[in-house]
Length: 154
Ligand code: CTP
Image (cartoon, rainbow, N blue to C red; front, side, top):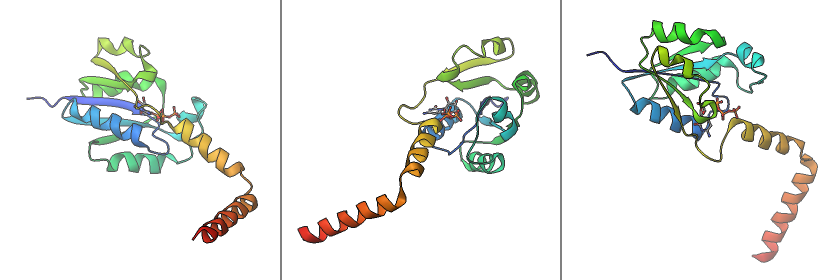
């Protein structure tokens, strides 16, 4: 019997629990999960600047046990070709893309999965930016004060 093939696309920058849960749910939907990871060049086209380079993002996704194969996503137009080449049964994306790929229903089943609440690469990048903007001398002074307070309380 033919294996049920699932295909998804994404950047997977600063790999987090939302990514992991999505891949786990996708793997359960079939027998073979293919993940197309967006290249750095394609991300620039989408106005996304990644922190982790493509090669590392691809290696991380490939190492996830739910994932069977990683391919590069380098253009908006490659999807139909990928679906045909890998004999894809289900094209799946997170809810943020709801309705955007309905035209692919001509080639395979198209599903949109709910996102994990409270986490995204965008929010991680914001936290990192906030942390980088803190004056490190001030931070060290604050830790010093905390240390002294702790000692006084003992
Ligand atoms: N995803 C998810 N739950 C989250 C974050 C992402 O299910 N909390 C899913 C997205 O819907 C997408 C896949 O993970 O199908 C890859 O998403 P990606 O855009 O790489 O991650 P985000 O954290 O959404 O990144 P950004 O904030 O840059 O959009």
